[in-house]
Image (cartoon, rainbow, N blue to C red):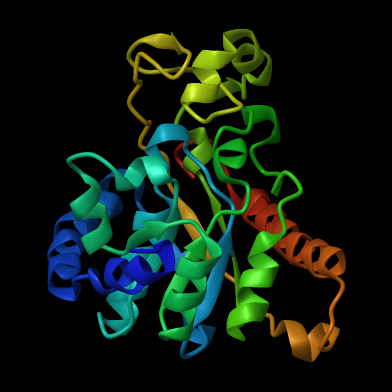
Length: 269
């Protein structure tokens, strides 16, 4: 069976009833521990949409649960929220759990199939490079030059919905992405398919290079969903990919700067 043949079955494994049960447990925890807010959903477009977001929080990133809990609370479970994910998340004993709540392997075929089905697809172009950005640059939009998300939106004919989140990067003190450490580890890092070995400082173990695992602080997380961008309407039938990417990042950076200006204290919000 080809990978293309397997794609529909993976996406069809999203289970709205099971997802509702998970959200029923997760939502009160998010609201109590992270005091989450999801703003801007009133203008969310119908049909397929590509949610492009910054990624925060290291190994315990809460971006997907926060957005999904807010989206399902407002719109119900008629339209799935899919998340393009690393292959490592889709293997092992927890794979079935993640697939049932909408996590799918990050490739163009999966993205196209999910978007054309009318689903909402969440993508973090910066990936692990973004989620482990140092605390000193925690409020910077940085996709590491990745622009594939634009082609995904164009191929499926759907709008991009820029989304920014603040607070997750305050869950611990992120010191460095550790690109130098990954180079030192050589074949070990390549086996783990990573170019970074992040170093952070947190509770309860203090200094951590991925392990030991520190618990995330109960930082307030605010997610702002921005107006959709119709690429063809704004940039023409054959848009300059770099121009679109610069525009998306500029819109997101402006919104993130505004959230940062409104934030009174770290962790407390």
